[in-house]
Length: 453
Ligand SMILES: *Cc1c(COP(=O)(O)O)cnc(C)c1O
Image 1 (tube, rainbow, N blue to C red):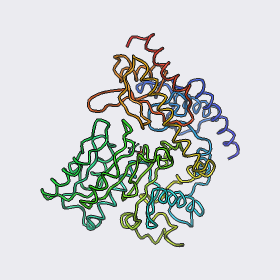
Image 2: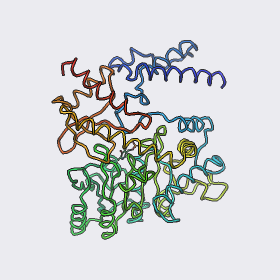
Image 3: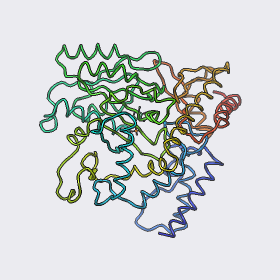
Image 4: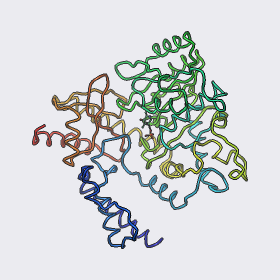
């Protein structure tokens, strides 16, 4: 192992220098990928020299998500202490299903979950788990709701017409999950949003009432803390009243921006969160841990047990089930996603997490201020969001983003809302500074003035 640890350090040094010198890797056209890099698997072993050369080639061409030029998706950067935790988790290689196999790592996971439940005002009956991503957290939420309102679904399957509700601006996983749980995509009702992309409680109320009249069984509402495109926050307090009135499950999908719970300044954006039945947050988004680190908590852990526990004599042989996390998780064998978040949280404290969150909002404000004072830009997103949506001159957003990528200038994506397409940059990398944001805009200006788009 020592030899490979040395090699690992060498490769990481190479990666870090590439990140600095070539922050946007030269993209390889998919049609040339297998000709450019030797990715083939052969009968014979590869000699070390070739192996290392191949690895370096792969590293060189892989998109650099921790570089100062990466604004493409809802994650980015590399926070040392979180990365350290994930590297340790790989070396320890526990599976989180039982206390016997994971030992204190179970306590680490439970501590994070318990602290988050307390922070959002959930009662002692609350608990949670780490899921393989935000989409799967949403899946667990909707499955718990299905089983609560239709207990026979677990054994007999779904035979009645159940309906669920989510805004037009919500994540696509909601529709996929409706199909996974046997309720069906056609049973997903799209609730209208206002011009900021926030779900309209009145429309939700109306759609639920209409469905009840027509003999459907409404059972689940998905609200979003940070919609994927605009970064909008649904009004949880108001939506929770509608959910209470109709007795349906309220889930808050905070995959993107649920981490505002760590900030005194921004937690008002999820006001009413204590009225939800479940809440999910991706620590690999705003909190900057390596992928993936996704948490779901439920107000009443009974639902986690009801939907996810299975007896298995070959697995659960010792210890109290509160410490056998396999009883409340989606998977059987499960990687340790908790340690990286714990090493980060432990070392910087809750105050440090607050600083991480606040800094992203500060960077977003800097970006909006720049756009607002510059006549060539048009802004489409709103305050209290770390998604900055804009267009530059009359250049179509997809043309600009693709050209910036192909010319190794910047990694940034585009999105659309109510038929308007725009560039979406995200200030989710908390290691960036004001100068990096300025560099982003200057790069666009310089690039477009020297290119025909
Ligand atoms: C990113 C995101 C998800 C999905 O999370 P994954 O970890 O990518 O599966 C779900 N909902 C929202 C609002 C998101 O932004």
